[in-house]
Length: 218
Image (cartoon, rainbow, N blue to C red; front, side, top):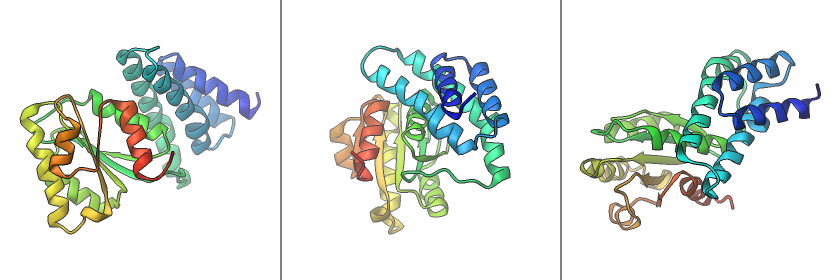
């Protein structure tokens, strides 16, 4: 089987929404001596990109996006990331993103989808998980030097944590070093402007477009 045929098999495995198939196909690609970064960029990420576009066009549903994201995450965790560590290989990226759901909020589906689609778009994503204190976004950014920080809030009661996080970057003298994106059901463009964020993503596709714009990619 040629390299291009393996790429297509990887893409099709993602389009199947079957995590077991994505994992098995990723293992098969490594056994065929494909570089893990090649598997990610020309296989899994391409598949996610297709799904993201279909979702944006209304051809797929949110549950489809979630299933594909979870399948790729499983393959990354179980198969590809250990191999990347062993080879000490680094994927070419558009920049590093730190993302998380703010303190007081444990919702993660939307955040996970955005993180996965940003990964598919070529970003290196550091996901801090849920219930993340404002200062943790600042501290992690000091450690990994991201180009973008993403703050997710699904509860209106946790919106003030987004403001607190933005203020934290200002207090630490880091505000000019990062672009800050906000999102979540109660978030609006007006709120983003009010707290001094750089932009608001209404959904995952919009978040990816915003991230690309913030780093100068059309």
